Length: 61
Image 1 (cartoon, one colour):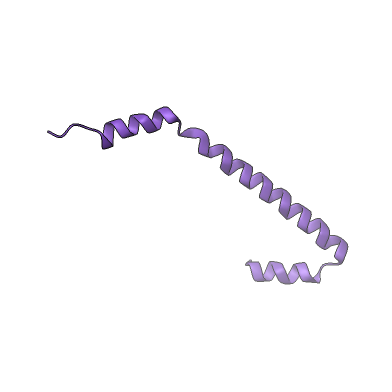
Image 2 (cartoon, helix red, strand yellow; image 1 turned 90 degrees about the vertical axis):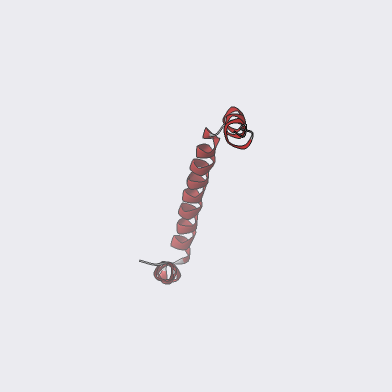
């Protein structure tokens, strides 16, 4: 199924069902964005410092 098919089905819905569909899509969008924001916090400031010290500022031999 692609977005065009979903859009055609959406247009065929009665107005009340369209509103329910929009609410469901917005709820899913909020859940997805919350999960993405939560996963980004795994890289800490100390991790960044350690990475810079071992890769960028390493002594040349």
